[in-house]
Length: 391
Image (cartoon, rainbow, N blue to C red; front, top):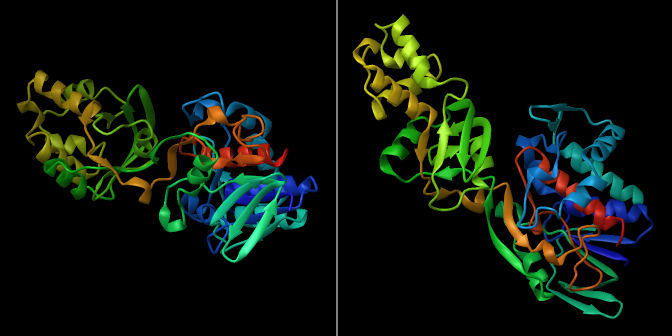
């Protein structure tokens, strides 16, 4: 076998079809019983397969320049060309996010067909128990089967969503061959709240969302929708900021990002002084949330009973709600794993290890993580393609 790829996910399948199209004899193996499980569940089952506005700045890494080469050589437009060639219907949801009109399996079936047409073989239910490097490449022990290859590609993903089969296997292989693993943690993940009063507030609002909140942490800021849950806070804006949050950090939330809440409340007082605060707030939030804000944060009296300083303080709280999450929901629900194999020890052009010839690392196993919105899939396509051109 010319090439063995461990991992039948997005990056592994892209690498396989690219290498096989070059005439390489390719085998993809995976311990799971199905290829592309994460593809199938992504984007609410519709697969947010790329983003029209993909830039290196959309990625988090200890080595921020590493992703540039691969992303420049296989762009969102290149993947879109394949999608269009297979006549897969898609739409832009928001902020350049592209989703299938039908279902995520359209993307997986496209990749599997490209692999089959190019002659790449996929073998599932095949856990690897041992890898040895030798003069001609690598020997792999898989159950009762021994496999040989010249080039070995690790596309086994990170630790996120273990129920889909995620393990730390790729990190073990990297360490076996002398690579440094940067600390890993859950990214693109909901926050949990344990403060009793705050948890009661969030739980009472579970399922309530607020459009276009701005959330800030550690110099980063995102503007998207926020969702209250029984455990704490979620929604796209929380998932985005979670990748920049560290335990103990506070976050700041602007619940009314379209206005200066203090000025607005003073204007409301001048025009509708007899209205109760909760009635005014229900113009911006659900009636239930307006009531809970008054119960937990403010009193509920007619606007005329507040002085300007009190209304300004209420506005300040709405525009600058500061809280400290107790933690995150962890890998169980995380969409990505932050950290991973140190990219300083991997070629940015070919994805080849600088410690071991003919060993390659692609996708989420590397210390490259994208923002929410199709960027992690684009990294899978780009890094898989980069390795597929040279293995």
